[in-house]
Image (cartoon, rainbow, N blue to C red):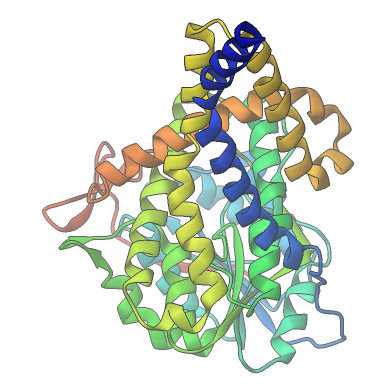
Length: 413
């Protein structure tokens, strides 16, 4: 009897080492449920409200076929004007744009922010859609994104986004991340206070009067003394919320963008995004305005904490493999598969075959946690990473492009 008791105690002590992981798992699931419950209540705004809209697009070395397809999709939305702010070095895109009824503004100033400001200053309508040059719209995006603006407190409206024609593992995984974002984080933030943390730059619509009001602050953003070059969408959203306006995600407005299919570019893109998020969220959490939106503050803190806690799971898995606890290894691997499937269920409903990619999705999630910590360690570094521009001596410059030709403007009818 004593021998049986001793063996039981030994086995108990043997497995108590994994208890912290179980406790952490319960806490993390509790935080997820706090987001998922309001997200389940989300509904897009429905009405017949419409305001005139301009589309503003910074253009830099875009794929010609995608660019042409995107222009056609914007024009099909019956918007008042499409303004393309094209880098002076990009002759191919200027040639493509000249075949469409759009306004072309050519700029020799590197960087996306200056192009955005030039665009919304040239616009003439109440609403301005800021759009990436590789983003393709559904036929009703303009109509759908207008609807939330019936509320005069709304300053900006975002869209639901997915990967355009996803091929290969990384693009499929990116598509999974996007669905998770728009059915979880953005949906819950829209329900709990109409304060979305980031209206993605792939397509976000703003009141033009607000854009003109925040132009100087937008261009003058710095972090720890270094001028900010990327993170324009986070900055715009923050400036809108700071001034007491609201930001809403209209999930019925669907757009599609291209995403990298190579690991090198994928990691560079994620590193840039992570740096932008750390800079924006840390600044926001140090200001009073964010605490007027307690749920938004909670989600910012939760996202930051998860960058650290997410890595504990693979650490315990490694420990279990070293200890040859194969039963625990199997249970943990199975739990990862089942639990992540539950969290991305809206995506699996749309693409059931993605169920077999969930293990890869889990591994990429762990890798992204490492990238986020690397981004935090290099938070002051300002470089686009996937474009040939960076901040040097406090100025946005080209890094490997020939000198741009003098800027000019031209319009085609």
